[in-house]
Image 1 (cartoon, rainbow, N blue to C red):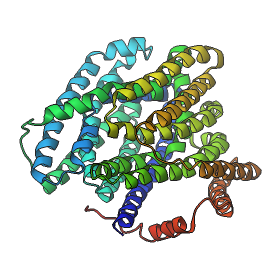
Image 2: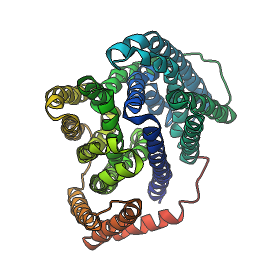
Image 3: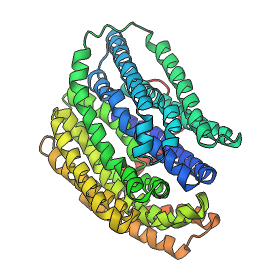
Image 4: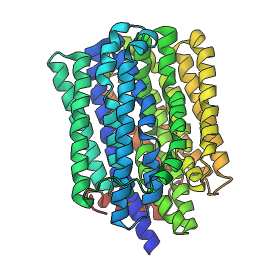
Length: 493
């Protein structure tokens, strides 16, 4: 009975974050047309490179300490120890984030001249530099709710953050500030929600000056993960730099707009990963290995049941979506969406199975796996972009993600074995293919037909899954009960 309650709680937490991620997807689909239409491909390319640069430097501000906090405090009961260790970690991240922000400010002219290929763009980099600090702190502060498993509160804060960000960006663009206004909107939003989140944490556990008494353990565990995040940036985002280098900032903007659509094939990954790690740490530390195995088995099963049809659907809807939400100059990017979308499906295997390696303490293997994917990605980009343009970058992404995902699945199995439900994955592929044919028959080319295609495709997919018995009666009963209780968001543990 206790295990059933834990599974139900886990499912409810994932559901809250799934709703959050749907809101985040909607935020992107609202923000993307606003930015592309207000900026054009060239200025949108600059916006893209600024964000990608921030993503590269972000891990050096966090220093892997968000993972360390989850690893050491997810099962901790002593509030005094949680308070002492958490604020010690916050102090280090704040210092590291400030240093990285200052370095970005100092190096802005170099980046503008040699990466962005326009020294006049250094102003935007300088303006955005402090975002490194704001983003690092907000990420760590939200981690507190993960380790407390207060996913209802995490959900509300994330949705409010995204909604506020879109609203502020729209406001400043309407005021005529364009890219400068969009960056200022991010700065205001980041500062505001750091203060809000910190206030909530202080209300719950109070404040304590950092003592750093156990910080050495956190740094020893977290810092080795820092280069891994930077290497993951090479796999995830370096292609924007490569496209900009070989083809110019306008091509980078077109590529990123299409990439943003295709990458949402893995939109269910974030809610699952956020909830999965603190739960498996708890069950693993308590010696409940069967429950840990079930978390992995069913996480991958249900993740694939969402990611695979999402990849098929986005591939079919890529061109009409770009026609609707962007300008004509972005539409040629639709051809890369299938490569990115199915690459995102493979990336789900990496992001889920990597938790096994974290549990086993073999974090050096993460560096090897990521380096393999990153090296392959760079090599393929250098070879393919001059020959195939942005299509070459997308193909490189697919191959790199496929290799990384499958290698991680194989390596993780050496340290902690759990079942992969291969038949359900095959059934999901079949049902998705049937769904894709139905969307093709609808032939969406307008807002109305796209809106019709999405629920119609979902209904066809679910109907085929039920016909070929992909879900058991027990699983169906669980999902029905889960949906009935989705509205009861718990703000406390």
